[in-house]
Image 1: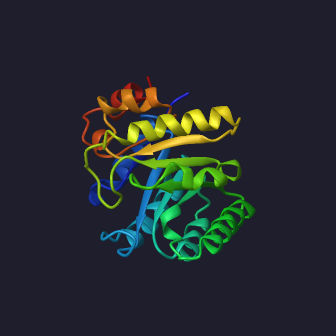
Image 2: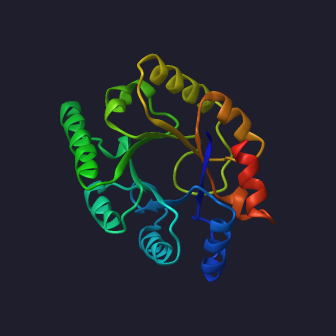
Image 3: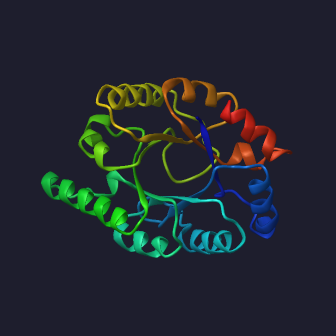
Length: 225
């Protein structure tokens, strides 16, 4: 079953209450929270996303799908764990120490830490990161997030070469009997969604395409098909 995680990155702040309620009525599966620190990527949405997430928790029962694009993963995890999200996803590339063994240990420790705090955990990779670099972590996580644009801003076009990466990931997890979701984020609309789903993704992150639609339910239903 394909699910839709609606990114609120481009949401108009003055319409937040109306937008959140309309997305709930339209039955989006998750609110996708794009957390950026101004360091890992140039844009900084950290405080805004904390405020948005807190507000959503007060008025909606729909789960939060938190995507951390930050250098200081530990601090961000602690900040967002307090909001009891459904899942927290952090980037493989956030751990860029030259000591690969230390990176491996730190990533596994972070996965364990999030799970020990009763939250699902996801691992994200940028378009140019080799899929093979994260294979060893897949048995320990709930979701792998494939970025189909460079992280940092909404409204970009999907990089078509990433479709093969989604397909290869799907093949690998099926072959190795690994039970995880494949989420795809970047340039998802009614045209690109078809190829993304065909490649093996089962959770689609869409922000601009959904929020610009006249009827949220129509496009969310179409994305799921």
